[in-house]
Length: 131
Image 1: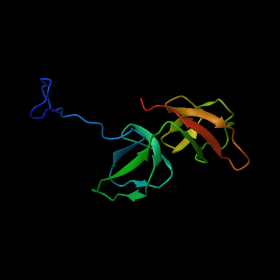
Image 2: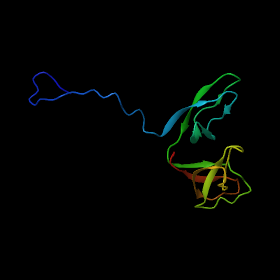
Image 3: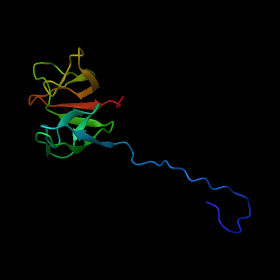
Image 4: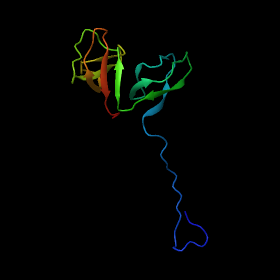
């Protein structure tokens, strides 16, 4: 920034852009007549992640929710329990069933299994980048 008496001529150019976050979470709109439960996996406005609060919208009503979209390892039981979910398996989001699946057809790729399905139908997975 320039100041009076600066020894080197400098031009100050204000920039109208600035970093607003580290990109580990994003605020997304929730459509009307939708229930989002805290700490569940959701796909909203093209973003897949973990909802950070519970929000319920009625008819003709919209709101927002913060999604954790950080590329990190997550634990969940929101899976299609009839499938294997072995380590290294690519996993997809079935937006109709609201569960993770091993089925690629018509589903969005969201990550890869890092800890296989256990007796409680729980897996760990690495969330992939938001593309």
